[in-house]
Image (cartoon, rainbow, N blue to C red):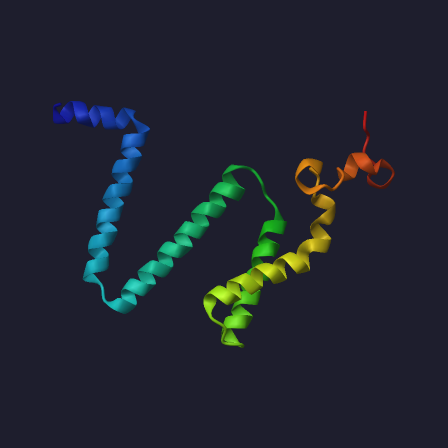
Length: 140
């Protein structure tokens, strides 16, 4: 296959183009990581973590159209719990993460109960149609 035909095929095929960009970016990051010292490598890794988190949140919230302050509130409760346990109580990371999940679930169970709608998954009734006198919903 000639280089010109390969170039035309890469422009048409999204998967090959994306894989090429990811592999090229990975090679560049590997070379940069080898050239940096330990502290700068740590900074690069922290930047990569933030990038992964922001990309995931962009996919979940931004591109799917699910704009919810509840996701941010749950993340804030968990992050605050981890920060307090690690910073003030000197816990290790894994127990602090487990404790933050427990605290977040326990602290947010009351406010999220009305939003649980699927009887097949949770066993709770569908709030607007099961209690129309409270929700003002029309069952049609």
